Image (tube, rainbow, N blue to C red; front, side, top):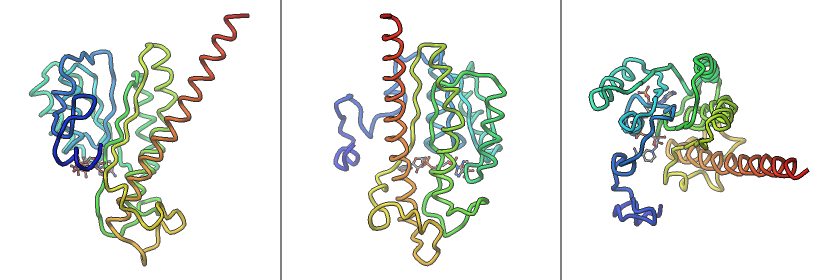
Length: 237
Ligand SMILES: NC(=O)c1ccc[n+]([C@@H]2O[C@H](COP(=O)([O-])OP(=O)(O)OC[C@H]3O[C@@H](n4cnc5c(N)ncnc54)[C@H](OP(=O)(O)O)[C@@H]3O)[C@@H](O)[C@H]2O)c1
């Protein structure tokens, strides 16, 4: 979406734009056969996303580090969608150990997984290192989600295979991805306090979200092509 459409809310080719609500976009959709994980579902855009998925019948998993806030979000969701199934699982994306523990816990629940929404994020925070010693915005917004996606990918593949429903991974980025350090991501200066800019560090983390989504999409399409090719080729023999 270009800046003009973003600001004016004018609808794009899909008929929807930045002024459209989640309820409008999903009107008439039955999501009762879907399981969705939403990171940062305890507040902001994440809660609204969780609420509307629940309203359409999906089984929603709120992945949050603040369990009290997540419980508040669950209560709010269940006021508009009383019959919905909403689970809360603890996840701190700034800790790779916590991401692994989350994935282990989710996989042990033996639920399907159709949609992963990598939504949680920190914005413009003062210089800080994560528990793993990585600049906080990059660690939370990109690295945590990158690892989480990798740990859940096989589950998403097996769900798609069993159900015949194509999965979806959504990375929430921002127009701020255009405002990075000069030239893009400064991989070799991620933790350099002397050059740290809260806005540019946010921008580079959001650029990483887009690069991750693009590359993942490319790889999954190659795998899907190879799978179909092998299937068709084997059939003909
Ligand atoms: N709002 C905008 O205008 C805007 C514009 C462009 C892009 N975005 C993107 O949209 C996404 C959601 O933004 P929002 O406005 O809804 O933000 P928000 O209201 O600040 O919510 C962010 C959520 O992420 C969670 N979070 C932060 N650090 C976390 C961590 N280490 N582990 C787990 N959860 C963590 C927060 O939980 P806590 O309560 O525990 O902090 C909160 O629930 C972000 O990725 C943001 O970059 C937003």
